[in-house]
Image 1 (cartoon, rainbow, N blue to C red):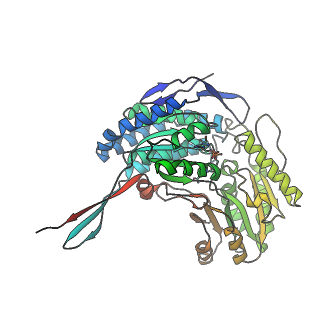
Image 2: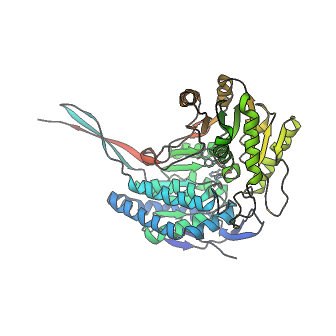
Length: 472
Ligand code: NAD
């Protein structure tokens, strides 16, 4: 069985104790990775610290050119790494799956490489000149989840190193292998210590986030863990970007053509089997189109092949881990008890693998857990609503607010609803459509801080004003 090493200061570190990474489609072992010790985590932070000043001192164009070379290598290795993502995460090679994730890995590498944050003159008169610069923060600790393991690792690492920081990343214990391989490739090109990776469970993450020698934490994961990370950072006062969970509402207005929006809505809810932070997780559908929308989603669910993602015929995979599988199953059972109607799915497919079919549920409303809680799985509650104001009020009645969407054939109506929704992003006639040039981040309990584009680069930088008196 393949063993994948960590990378600290440019060296492959085989580690001591190992744990197995399980393929959720088969229950088999994909490979084994080290459980980092406290000493190894500390060594990784020290390596990042030692490398940082020289890395930051390089001309910005040099760093950009190295990122582009990394992008070239990622392109060359796309198929191999996509196969690893499919094996450890479950998402198929085909459809919006692991090859799609590798395209994003390349895109989210090349775009920050192509951007530069220029100093801004914020004030000038006869007496003074004030210029705002963005300088590196130092060492960035990155902690990633299991749903889009490679893409989210890249979201965290690339802007950080582009701006002259160095990185220690800890991928999810469920999906560390593709990230280990991406960091191995980066270390072919980068100076030692610029990007380091340690693997293990939450205790390894906690060691990183509580270190006094970390300047910035980029955390993507659940709200619950996000709170622990924020508490840990309260001692060091490390800067934080928290990309946490969501329970995105999609509001479907009664002027839509249900068949025309069905595919966008389907993938908006079910990309990666709903295991996506910014998936539509509650649909509020106006009465006049409710039945048509439900039928259109069910029709699509019935023709999408599900199975082992290494088979290119499949576009739907398993739920990534058994804890998540159990959570989704329990939410559906609870919805059934509440009297909800299950239009398709609703019963586990049966092993091997954590397969649970696409499940469309109606006859359900707020107050039932399937609506109120982030399900993070292949099941969508469809809530029948009357007027727009009711839909907006229900959509906003949540402690989390990552994304939201409005579906309408009337641009003015859609904009008016979008303006009233609480969320970091409101999409119109699409959902979850992130882009490397467009800032992305949560509102309310979904966290804070922006990723992507110029704003993403600024959020891994220290704003620094140089204020000069004009004399003579
Ligand atoms: P999780 O919070 O369980 O784990 C995330 C990471 O934190 C893992 O690497 C884990 O090992 C680590 N960790 C656990 N305990 C820790 C601690 N005490 N200190 C530091 N690190 C610790 O989340 P998950 O189950 O892997 O991911 C699913 C969640 O992530 C969902 O809620 C989803 O919505 C959210 N998510 C959000 C975004 C976003 O951009 N907002 C993107 C993807 C996923």
